[in-house]
Length: 81
Image (cartoon, rainbow, N blue to C red; front, side):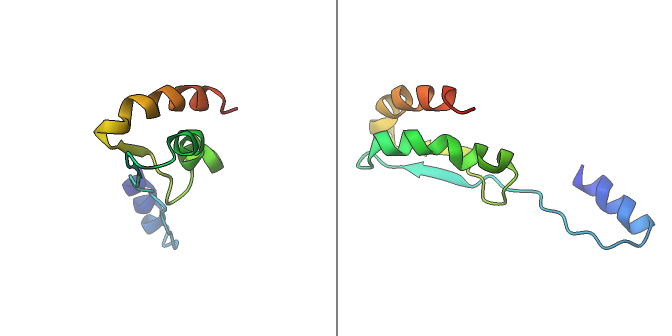
């Protein structure tokens, strides 16, 4: 989609800056405060409707903390309005 927008702007000789985002990771280690990490993780991607150049749309959780994190993460996501 970004290429089409840029091409349309070029055809009309209009300046264009594209914010195409990224796939910044939210990294959670086993010694983290898992309750806080799970409670705040949904807002790292959903805040600002996900239109943020540093929206953390991936979550990497250390294997030893994964199950506990997910138990806390699911209700946190469901609570986002």
